[in-house]
Image: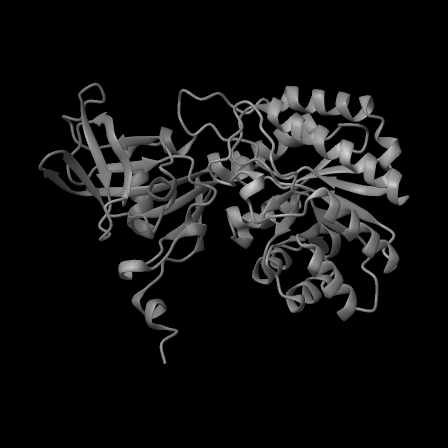
Length: 417
């Protein structure tokens, strides 16, 4: 049973036990997504595609352990994320370190832990070589193609490549690989990340073609072979009921065809990897919150006990999250609706989970479930206005497990001296 299929009393019991607002994740749905990935991409071009889960999406070691045991690695962008991956049992080349504007000390520590280093900047390649006399076991470089236009390309979050701070253009990436080769590196990877929450599988294939062709060109010009190609993440999540799911089945078939069509043996027959986070855990998570107030002025406002400090995406990006309601009232009628804004209590007017949304008529004490909150939700939380981050709970069959306690005022004041 999915969370939104539970009754009011079942959901109220969770809030009574763990507090409101509350983040809840469904273990079964996470495993379902992993199996969906493996069944459609696990046999691509013989070697299969391995996903390195983007830790930034849901940095909780309990969740990471589930993913690691299911065969996934981890994409980390900071040393604390590397340490979280270690807590989940990962080590060495189970981890790829993809960061930007990074200190040499961070890169050196990550490489000492055995993580695969993904260089974002040509100058950092030279600095790293100058400071580390032992060549890396394997090195990646991140490609930024500059101006590129695809029909329907979703760049609202990650930005246009020509304006993005990430990666290296072709001339720089050629120099980077030559430097790495001359330093003694013999195993190479290539990476790009140009899509975020992109539902059109054809755009993902265009990115794959772009990177495959570049890998062949680099291999030919520099006489190197690629062991791995990281296509980035960005598999889209259908946040809205009128959106279609990402067609991973067709994508897997077409990706395999493309790999063979371009004869990737010329680049070293590289293994394909990805770094999807949102697509893996997004649909498994919910933010549960209670209605505490109603206000009628120029609009009707439904006040809940969660705020943008719990879920930033709607306020920051204008992102849509589906909302469902539960009520223990005998007069509750799903077919009787009103147009409302669902708001928190921050001193910011963008602290809204829904704007002019038609929802069933609600009253104080009703429960609101905010869907698709299993990625970039709790992880993006903050303490502005003295708001405290909520607990996280893992649902497994009929049981629940606290995997992160709620913050208290003691936590809020803990760093003051």
